[in-house]
Amino acid sequence: MLNFIRIFRTSAFNMLMIDFSTGRIIDANDTALKFYGYTKTQLSDFEINRLLISSNKHHTNCSFKFEGDFKTKLSDDSTKNVLVCHVITEIFGNKVVVLIIQENQKKLNWPTLFSSN
Image (cartoon, rainbow, N blue to C red):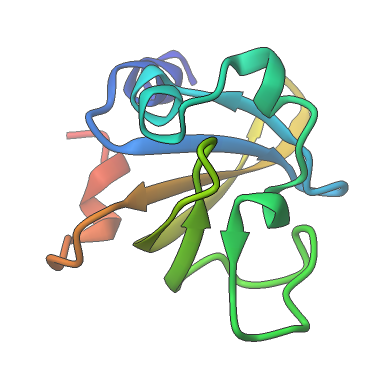
């Protein structure tokens, strides 16, 4: 668990932690705060679909699969194309979705991002 949290905090990837049942953003790493231009307090007032825009209209809260190409909205109201992957886990007894958000579209080996090597 502590290794996962350390990776979340120090990752060079934009990472958001989302409450699984509500879709509310509960945490963001420093990389994501810089990318989006919001503070942690500001982001904690948002549901994820305020930041991630999908052409698939059934994507609401955490009921959709958080993988693939999206547009994301930044604090200055501009949008960027991003690649998103998710990991569902339990942290301190709460089910959460961790989103990994990459601005450029180069391919990553997502499964190895959280490997415990």
